[in-house]
Image (cartoon, rainbow, N blue to C red):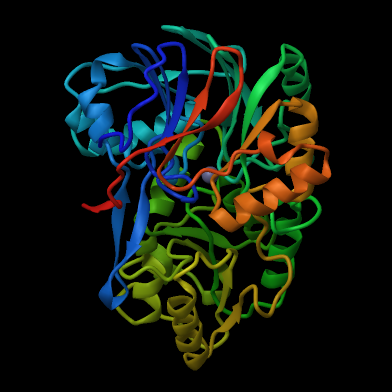
Length: 451
Ligand SMILES: [Zn+2]
């Protein structure tokens, strides 16, 4: 990666670079650079659509980081979704010196599990709300926020040119299943120091109001299991521990046994129980190879493959390639999920096939409240802006149209156009020594490479 036009050589400029590209929802990888100091925030993957309904991993462009690895003070991970941590194992194979990695307890467990698959001995340093880090010229404080994966954090990054609030994926859920709300008083308290720039999740800027609380899903599961005469299946994003907890609560109430099917579901549930993020009702679990000892109406399956991914447990089951589970009339399958763009066709094919086999299928086109997003809508975003009161705004984690909607809302709140940064995909952001923030040079960024 090289800078296309003459780089701003002013030594006192802080640069912010997105190596996944601004306007890219996935492949989150942000770099804060000041003189000989680089701070990396997140290192995610994305997915590329391929022929035959197969997808391949897309990873950010690591060239600059590899060339400048001596400057990297630390890698900080905001939360445990793959589009924020999945690229780390690939980056670490290319970096020759040990770099401290910081993440919450849950995120650290997810990362270490990935690294162990590569026989890596890298360990992640665990942070919490109390942690304060000094990393070269940078300082970092951590703010707990609610999202659709446990233990997510926002960062307040101190730099020589001003304070930056790095607001990765979040929503303000006042009744979270875990019981722990976002730390709004800390946001307000630390923001009193004067935040110069707010980077904010903008993914749901097209949606008005607040995103609904996760807790409402349990009622929907109750409604769905109530009349189920056969086997009951729930599928959702495997990393959504709160969603699995609610499914398990309802399954226990209806005195069914729970069967965990699919590698990603089994992995997440095992770690979540071990670390205390999930409560498994006593005696509820039945291994897949023992299900023949039970009647269909005694069983409930927590199964991976909510996007109908080719080769996932659900896809294999529906198309008859799972010898242990057969879909029969009277079974019910609940898709507790949104369609990820590009998956609609595959999911609809799966629903067609399930319907043909005689199963009842509940999905968001026909049933309400089967899914709530982990990302805040306009009111959540406005609340964060109001708490942080930054001089400048930079929407991240959304496509350009969502960045634009975020900007329009900020303008309604009194911000001027010049205070809202809307970079092109490869543009850098510069924060000058007087605190002024502006769009900088473009970089050459290759498209995500297939692994
Ligand atoms: Zn996320």
